[in-house]
Length: 88
Image 1 (cartoon, rainbow, N blue to C red):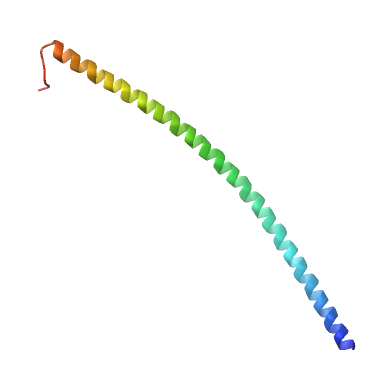
Image 2 (image 1 turned 135 degrees about the vertical axis):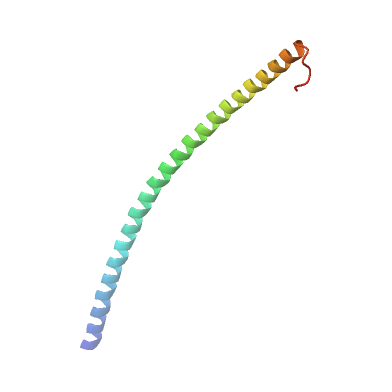
């Protein structure tokens, strides 16, 4: 009978050790998860800033293209008014 009790006591102690290790792993994973969530938040904020910059740069590009188009049109009008016609 004592051998059975010793076996149960050993099994109980091993189970407690395993549960303690499992608890540590779960706590560590929780901490890592919190860090990853903070990093994800930082990445999302960076992505938002990049998208805003991209939109601003597209608007500036469109303004520049419109200005160059207007300049090209004016240059063509000046050439035509001077009787130049087609470019040489």
